[in-house]
Length: 435
Image 1 (spheres, helix red, strand yellow):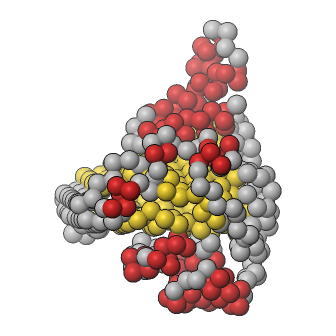
Image 2 (cartoon, one colour):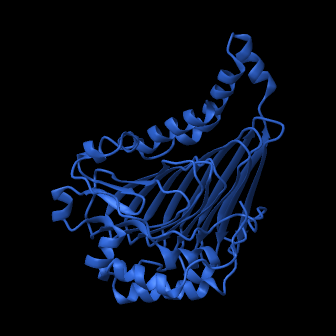
């Protein structure tokens, strides 16, 4: 797939789409700003991955609406299989293509002021709460071409708002099912946890076709003072989907964001996960697992910026490369001047299961303060032939031996994931990719 450099949409299309969705004026203006920036900005430049010939554009972003359903049982089987049993209690949103076909939040949470809805509804009914955080402190449209295109054609997503001192005990789950060939899916997720609140959010991305499409995904997570957010994701898009996904966090004093990311796409993928530890005592922990296969190319960049004193940042990533897959794992810990007593630790490990597979782990520490602690570790290597020999000498086939090795290599990360439903879906996704 070659890249299309010409902008495929125009001002009239963007304005018509915004009006069709009954969006407030500020959002229409933000879309038009993104369209203007699309003419001026360049593609992002992920370290050690050349994406100039990747296809990140499809002209179709205004998709036909899907039929809304009133019960989970009316959903397709492929979607029902992804539903977490706890979320089934009511805290669930399902988006097919760009339509929120099912959404439900429990009366208990609604009465406490919790908002869990699709982005279109949020723009119409909760604009005052959405506006400060949609392309807020965490993400800026002017950063690069793909973010500019995203804001101009955003056509799906979720808004979550948890009021001060409210604790959401049951996970909120969103399922995004992409089903139309030659379409551009520009999904945007915003999570806001006000002071001393807690919430767990889990999202699943899946495709129902093997035809070409583009996924341009952005998530912004804001943890206010003393808040705790657990963000889990299992991305499992097909081989003909080119994906650009940016997930970012903004963490205030004594707040925390835990990331649990299963990156199981089969297509070419650029993934960036960045957290800014703004407040004193802020904390983030990001765990990522991935399996590459076929001839796919992937780049995973995880960044933690320490701004506040006594801030704590942890990165743990394990990746397995099969066949002719190539993946770059970049980890960056940046401790800014003044962030005294901070601690940053990261580990990247890559296992290659064939001679044609390629993996690269690049841990980077950037320290602008003396009174801190920081460390990193990285390893890249082939599977141990003695390990395979031992398993096969016990009557296990090579395919089964390879499967066991992969599960064993990823287990230290999977078992530490803080969200049980993510663990389960991730194990299922891993099993599907090692067969």
